[in-house]
Length: 492
Ligand SMILES: Nc1ncnc2c1ncn2[C@@H]1O[C@H](COP(=O)(O)OP(=O)(O)OP(=O)(O)O)[C@@H](O)[C@H]1O
Ligand SMILES: [Mg+2]
Image (cartoon, rainbow, N blue to C red; front, side, top):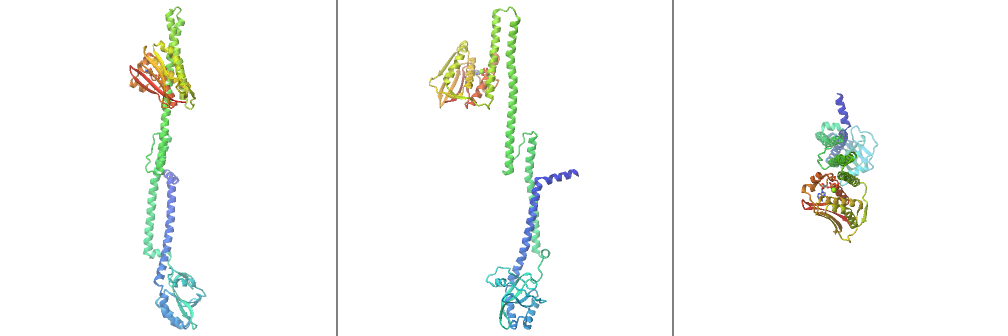
């Protein structure tokens, strides 16, 4: 019982209940107004009909009354004639009025003495050529607005001008309820009207239920979404307001879901980064510690072994330094809110500078490292420190991948109002599968993983820096023949 009450209370508070209430109240008001107008117009129609069919009545009566009236409006002859008329047609009340509308002769039953005056304007209205019916006057005695028939007449010894007035609806006027009881037209109209109103009411309830059902579905989806079911989507249906709202909800849900996915992916990458980094730091540190320990423990190590241990310690320290440097670059590139420090600088100078730093490494590896860039190369607009890292990472990779006797060439030239930079090596190259993966963070080719070099961060950093400069790193490679890396920079 209490639950039923609760349900009713909930429904009465709902949008549906309120819409239905307003609709039904409006419908009821409209029905009452329409019924009132219809009934009163019906009555009016009845009177108009009565007046129209009997408009010549007074003219006809004048034929009978004119003679006796010469003797006076209240002469026995006139009364006699009037009595005869009324005995045939008792629903009519008959009067003779003077030119001002004052009652001169009253032949109505009971003959009320009345100094009432009838509006001459109304009488003249009906006597005009095309009167607008029904015309009513305040009937003498009864003082009810009534339809009538009128004709000019002369009366009395002085042949006074006046009117013969026949008031037509002398009978009691019907009340609305009496009409309902006795008029089949009114009854049919009322029944048809009631049926139409009931039908409109039921249709309205159904329609609103349908409309609010879509709202309810929308609300349910939003509620499920709010508690974490992010896959919620709504069939938008028609292109109305609710359809638009549903579509807007779907778009919003899709955006939130995509952002959540991105956040999750970010989180996963961050965790992976930390795991990879701790591994990448631990390996050289363990090795470094091992060699240092051996140097400390062993008192008389052969000079060769000692040198080898020291070289291993230095190599591990270098690896750690490299890793730290890549990380700091990565942190800078990842900090997207931080703007680039774009400046105009000479790319030719920068290339010569970096290549100079790598020359010793190239010589040691038995490679031919050359620069091919015209002295007239225009300055470029870019972040100098980041482009430095890009070039260093690409040249470092090229040198590492090229066997002794090979060549690495760094070149720059103007192409379509941009400067294209290329690093070409004749090294081991990359297979198509490897090429698709090299720019992923921490990806290393199986060969380089086996050699235990690199961290797999270099190319991912290069790719991100290029993207932030609005350009794209282009890599082409043929296994066994070499690799070709290129990107563009805008001319300053
Ligand atoms: N020019 C190239 N030729 C052949 N292999 C390449 C070339 N450039 C990169 N690679 C390989 O692609 C992988 C990814 O290179 P990346 O520069 O991202 O990392 P890394 O060189 O291993 O480490 P880091 O550059 O951070 O020290 C590495 O395994 C590397 O050997
Ligand atoms: Mg590298």
